[in-house]
Every structure is written in structure tokens, then in C-alpha cells.
Image 1: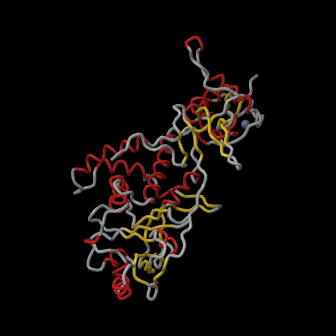
Image 2: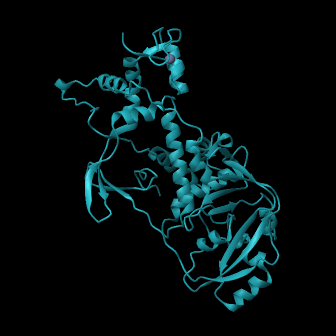
Image 3: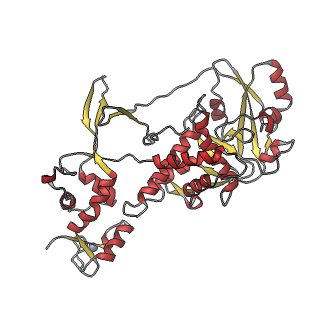
Length: 420
Ligand SMILES: [Zn+2]
């Protein structure tokens, strides 16, 4: 009698339901009960094979760099059994049999020239997550946006609704804590703003009126940025002074003025750093029908986070139309609008930046009121940059099947076409 597995002995809730729905009363190899629906290991292999095939591929040859400047090539990845554990999320004593069942379930036909996909001696890696179709969908919405921004583009709305669906229930896991991605910053939260100060005249006016010179800019003085189109005012700031100064990317010896402000109300913000971590928060199941959608959605959100975090590249301003539109969506179109977003600093590891959206209709002569911030007395400081610290980390270089090098930045592949 072939081994079987009952629905009570698998951790994955989706797989458990599949087994309960289609199982029969076999004796389970784990709990040795015969009173719960169970499937044979052979059937388990048939269920898992297409899932494994969709999400794992033969490992590429990768260059490894050693300590002593020697490099060598080796196949990247793990044996089929590692992929099996990854998909099941647990280990079974009879893993070899599951692997055999997967190899058997691959119904290739050698006379037709088919080759086996699975080989017990080969190594496999997770397939790169494709976010191309999100970019394609975005590409389509651009046409709409070009016809003016008098109202929010319906297809941009559809895209962002899908992307931010359920965001209020999403939590990031940090140690034992489960932290909401949509969070409330209490009234009195400190934020920092800085400006390069390159003349004594500028210093004089900054010192005389810190909030006007270093606080939220008036509408007419705004340039387009990562989170604002031309004519739209948002407030860029940092959660701490060091990050704020690093974001200025000051040259050595330059002088920068910095102030502290405090929020005058509780503000609802979307935390992109937590959003990145939330992928491990609510564990996805490979057996859930929308697994691929969910993985792609999270990968696309990480890519947006990266786009928000990086400085605007001259000549590539059009790239920021997507994050500008996203900001507009979060501020005005989302069911429960946000007052701002938090995102990671790329200029200072561990640093957090904040963008605040103004309260609608409150952009008056006092921009600070619209952004619900006020200057903290006597926090004006002038600093001079004395040292800049760089840090680097090794990247893994992979050569793909066409001989093209590919550097893994942890973000998945770039979109196929340059959407502009
Ligand atoms: Zn069992």
C-alpha cells in the first residue's frame, strides 16, 4: 500500500482543504489514523509538480568571488527536495518519495524530443518574479494621463486599487510584533527639514523666519518631485536630523541649515518600509489560487518603494509620473485617504523619510497649517559637512542563457520595456 497523507497533518491551509475535498480514507503515514481524508504521495506529486514548475527553474551558472580575488563558476540553487520543503512549508520523513512522485508526474514524452524538467542531480532556483504586466498596465494608463489631469484617470485608479487592496489589514512582522502598514503618527511627531545655505544673506533670512524658509514651500515655488507633479505641493522631510542631512547630499565643506518641526495632529501614513517586510507577515501559500498575483503585487510595490527612495535622475523625470500619480491616489482617491507616506532613505541606512500631503483646500498663505506642522522654537541649526561615508556590498552576478550578465539587486528583473 502506498503512503498517504491526511489533511490534518499538513500545515498549509490551502493544501489541507484540497486533501479534504478530494481525499479518501487511507491510513496517514504521519499520524497513522485512517479516519481523515488523505491522498497518496503519488497524488501529492501530481498536485505539486505544476506548482513547482511554475515557480522553480534550473539554476543558472553563477560567478562566485572568493576572498583571494579568485573566481569560479558553479550552478546556483538547491535540490528538488529544497523546493518541495519551500512549497509545503514543512518537512516530511518520506521527502524522497515526494521527490520521486514529482519526477514521475512530469509526463514528458522522449519520442517527441521532450526532455525531463526534473532531474534529481540538478539544482533549481525560484523563478524571478515578473512585474512586467503591472508596468504594462501602467503604460496603458499613461495615454489617459496625457489627456490632462482634470480628473483622476480611471485606469490608474483601477491599477492602484488593485495594488493597495486590503492595505489596512496588512501587517509587518518584526520579532513578535505585528505592525500595521497603514499607521497613525501621533500628534507631536518630530520631522526635520534642511536647506543648503550658501550665502550670508540666505542665512539671515532663514534665521529670521525658519518655518517660511525651511518649512513647506509655497505652491508657486514648487518643482516636480518624486511624489508631486508640477503645481502640486507636498512636504518632503525626514524622521531624524542625520537622515535629513544625508538626503541633502551636501558637498564637503558646504553649509546646511536644518530645523525640527512637530506635527499638530495625528496623521495617517502608509509605511513603505513595513510594506516591504509584510511579504513575510501574512504567509502566502503556493497552493492558493492567486499566489502568483500576490507575489507579483508585492514585488511591484517593492519596486515602487525603490523608485520613491531614489533621487530623480535628470532626463528621466517621466519615470516619476507613476509615483506622483500614486501619491495623488493615496492622498485623494483611496477609500481611506492617507496624510502622507514613510519610505526608506537610500542616503542613510536605516533612515526614514516622510512625505506629507496637504489638507485639501487649505493651501493658504500659511502652508505649515495645511501640512499640520509647526516649527519647534530654537531648533534652527547651521552645520558644515566634514565627512561623507560610503558603504558598499557585493552583488551576485549571474550569466543567463543568452550569455548576458544579470546583477541581482533583490528587486527582480527590470520591466521589459522602458515605459516612458
Ligand atoms: Zn495524518
